[in-house]
Amino acid sequence: MTGFKLAFSTALSTALALAAMSSLSQPAAAAIEYPWCVQYGGGHSGGGRNCGFVSYEQCMMTARGAGGMCQQNLFYPGTGEQPPRARKRHSSN
Image (cartoon, rainbow, N blue to C red):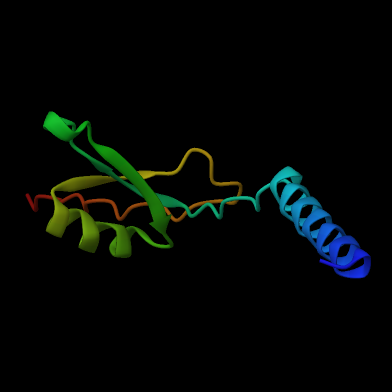
């Protein structure tokens, strides 16, 4: 290689290495939190949690199909929607 090609190749390699290192040192984007989570059972796989649901109904649709249960996300910064409450029946006397 000629002197110019060697210098260019070295400079390019250095620039690429610096770009790669600087991208690793930047903080990761904050995870988006949603108000509802599905908690999956433990079993052999250890269970899991998915907090990607905007409504209780959306959460329940997933939980029913996957054998989980819905819980409010305690780490959600906003106010979450409350789960629907069972209506009390009044007996007529």
